[in-house]
View (cartoon, rainbow, N blue to C red):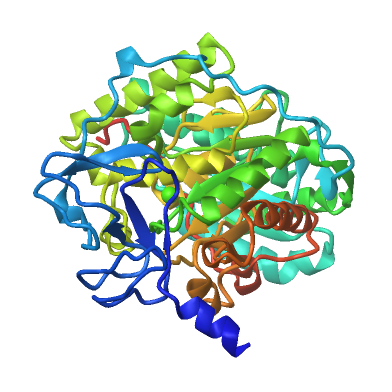
Length: 513
Ligand code: CA
C-alpha cells in the first residue's frame, strides 16, 4: 500500500506518440519546478496537472507536436522542462477543405462481435428504446408554462397508474414563432422537432400542444397517418384554462395506456443507437476517456450498433484524419459539406473556430482547438465512417456515423436525440452535471481525482489509464458493459438518480424576426 502511494507520487508524464516533443504532467495538482522524471528531465517551472512540458528544446517557429500531429508553433524559444502554456503557441491554419484525401485509408471491417444483448423496448417500426417515456411535443414556446403545469399533474395523478412508463417529458423549446419560418436554414430546427418526437424512447406516441396562431403549424410535427394528436389552446371549444389542461391530460392518459403495455425484451446490441459527446474537456480527454470510449465504440460497431460522434468545431481541425476513413467518396464529400457549411456559418457571425475553446479547457491544459480536436476525434474509434447526418437528420444506417452538430453540450444532445440516439456517453475532464430527460447519459471522467470528488455525479472513471492501473482495452470493455447495463435499465446513471436534466436546446441558424 505505502509502496503504491509512493509510486504514484513519482513525477510522471504521458507522451502519446514518438514524434511528440511535449508531454502532459499526470500527477494530481501538478508538479513544482525541480521535479525530476525517471528519464532525467527536470522541470524548470511549476506545471499544472494535464498541462504540457517540453521534452526537448524547441526553437522559435518550430512545430509543437502532440498525438504525432502539429498543434502549433513556438512563438519564442522554449527550453526542455518549461511549461508550454497556450500563450507560447501560435495556432496553425485549419486544413483546407479542397485538398483533403477522401477514402484513402478506409479501415478494414472489424471482426463481428456476437452474443451481446440488452433489455430494450421494441417499437413497431423496428427501433428499440432504452426508456419508456411519454414525450409531449410543443409547436411554440408560448405553451411552455401550460405544458409544465399539465405535466406536473400528469406525473402526480396519472403516472402512478402506469408503472411500466418511466416518465412524462415536456419537449419544450424557444422556437415556433417570431422566426423566419421559410428561411432555408429553418429546416434545421423544424426537422429537429419532427424527429425528436419520433425518438425510439417515446414509443411512437405523438402528442403536440399548440397555441393556434404560431408560425410553426403543429401538423408539421405529426407524422403522416397519425390523427387526433394535437391540442390547440385557442380552440374555441375550450372554456378556460381548466378545460385546456383537462384535454391535455385526457390525451396523455390515452397514450400512457398504450405505453404501459411496453415491456423490456432481450434485443441484440445491434439495436442500440449510441451518441458520443464530450464537454468540459481537458488534456486527459484525449489520453484516457476518449480513447476508452473509442475502444467501446469499436465494440459497438462490431456488434452491429449505430454510433454517432458529433461537434463540428471539434473535428474541423482534424478533418484530414476523418475524410481518409470515409467508407466511400459520397460519405467523404458529405463530411466536407458539413465542415464547409459550418465554416460559412461561423464566418457569417464574425467568429472562427478558435471561439470553441473555453477558459476551463485552457485551465485543463488544452492550448487550442487543434489540440482539443485531436483528443476529441479519438472517441470515434478506428472503424470506417459509414454515414454523415446533417444537423437533426435521423440515422438510418449502422456503424460509425458523423452527426453534424455544434459542440455546445445541450445543442449536441438535442440534435443527437433527433437523430434517434437512445443513450449518450459523455466524457468530461473538468466535470459537468449534464443530463438529458429523454435518454440516459453515462458520464465518464478523464481523471480519477474528478471521479472521486464527484462520486455522485460521475458514472465511470477512465483515469486509471493515466496512472497505468488499467489499459485502454480493459477500460473500454468495462465501459461497453456499462452501456449495456444502462440501456437495459439495470444501472441508473447519476443524472437520472438525481433527476437533473438540461433543457432541449434547438440549433436555429436561421434569422429571428
Ligand atoms: Ca460538447
